[in-house]
Length: 123
Image (tube, rainbow, N blue to C red; front, side, top):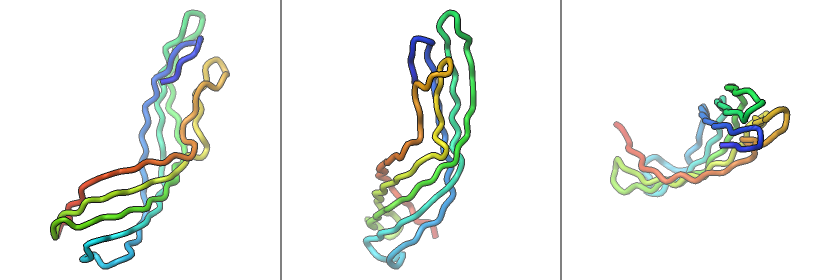
């Protein structure tokens, strides 16, 4: 959410990545390090509620997303793995939230996230 004297905006984001990854060991290894890269669209839907004298507005902005990932999985069962992944990425161009021509927020600067997950291996 972005706030200013002009009003507030709620921002919802969605990111879709398509990519490839490389495993550094055999699929049957207990410890499985891997890496990957991805690219895809990012969508930001912004809905503004304006203060008096300004107008409400809704906008959808798209941008290109780029990301890289390093991961490590450990097999706890032949078909179940625990995963730890680190992602870094950025949006180009970086979407801006503007109130009456003034930038009040942006999204997509270089970012990083960590993910802990469970992987189920299908036959």
